[in-house]
Image (cartoon, rainbow, N blue to C red; front, side, top):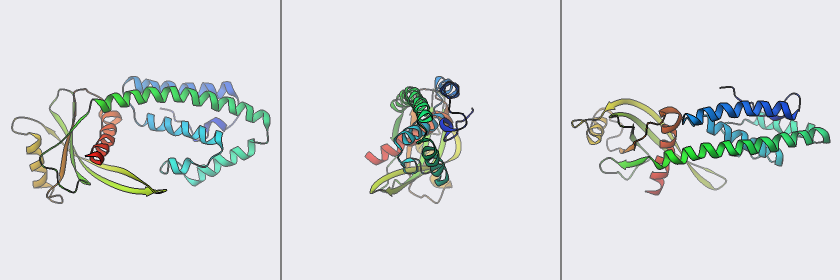
Length: 237
């Protein structure tokens, strides 16, 4: 999939029709992925570009705060420099404003489509503790199962909390451990006991099952949504 650069809308020749074609080609690729229920990384990339447009339009330096892992100081400086170079040219700024307004509206519509899929997937996920839940739930395991198969993917997770501007945020890091096959002799409880036996660094781990009856794409959709859903579940439990 062809990606847009951080400042695609203001690079090269500032022409509405040309930028419109570039944008629509990009959004077509994103929509194709959404039609296959594949959300990531397309949805996060699209949201980044949408916020990037608005930040440029409003001439605010919020990009680094909103996307600390995506935007570097050099990219911020480049964005601001583009603004300063163009602000004195009224004709270019008018064309650029048309490009940004059109693009932001189109992106917003596509983001809404992705958000609908996200909400649907999140609604169809069921999270259940496996056995007793310890006091410390910041690290543990989860079992991910989708569709009508007995296949189960086992993951280790670790939650962390960081503060920014007096607000607390949670993040989650995961690592795939192995595939398991559920059966009468290999239930979630049995899998948990096996983890405790062979993963001795966590003698009393928090373990959750995350299930859905739908066969969503694992890496592109189910896993990212499941991770965010688990963070919310633990935060409100």
